[in-house]
Length: 105
Image 1 (cartoon, rainbow, N blue to C red):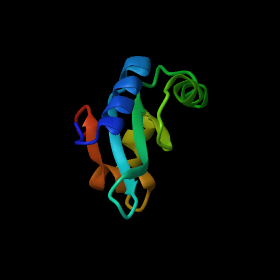
Image 2 (image 1 turned 180 degrees about the vertical axis):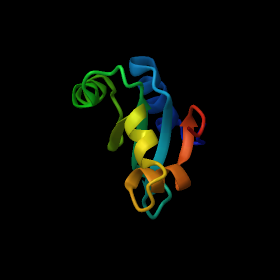
Image 3 (image 1 turned 135 degrees about the vertical axis):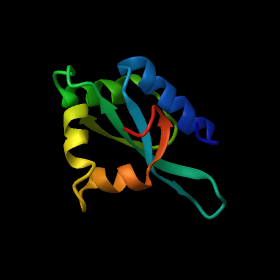
Image 4 (image 1 turned 90 degrees about the horizontal axis):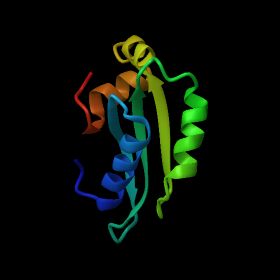
């Protein structure tokens, strides 16, 4: 897990709602005082998820976080397709992201 309580709490909420394969911290921004001001996750879910758009909406509706955050969802088959395609967002995250939950797939 990450050292930041807000990031960890948000990741735990995501885990409880959708049981993802992985949650990857893409970025976190801090202000000049060192306070977290925003962050972004990539969440890899099973292919059985019918609609990532609906899941994304549900996550935003059910997770209360005092700091702005973004979620990018990938189905497992999409993740597997793009994570090794040099230059894609998935490739960058696969190679530089911090795994908050799950293992590097």
